[in-house]
Image 1 (cartoon, rainbow, N blue to C red):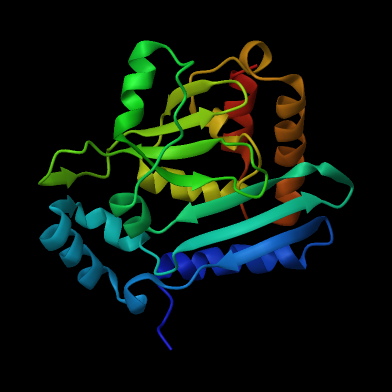
Image 2 (tube, one colour):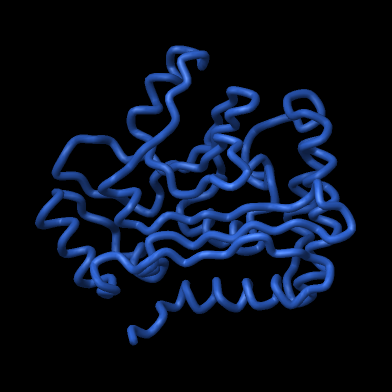
Length: 231
């Protein structure tokens, strides 16, 4: 049996706490079959470079996980309309089989940017169509740095915006929020009252109140400050 990568170990610890909490009902959890037979980052990164002309910064290695995806769906037991979904894609999945929704209603400059976006996280269970993606131009050979832009697309509102996090920051925040619906807005230049439906804002605010009770060892004040600053 292959040993878990450090990131997978962190994800599993978060999942254990989520499942154990009486405040939460976990509706679905899945770690899809390992890619490349569970090979480590060294093997996978070498294959990406040799077979696809894609050279990833060494900083990505510490964030690698072998599962095809890490997926969990949860709801608050006190209010089943509030919850979240996390569906993180394996690095090989987005780097080689990258995809992004097609939305011709976006402004021309934003629509043109879609061609370079590869989905790293989305909500297949909710079926919202909303995704987070990393900017990876198609030209090969290509070196991808940790500073590559991360974007959030809200399909319901046909909204696309760049997040002020890198790939590492995205994964860190994804674990901290466990995919609470709409958390990505906290890292974008958005007016929550004016640009996001009230139900979504209220749901996010409620989750930010409950998450510290589910994960008492984590600090949610920075996220709360981001929320307040966008009202």
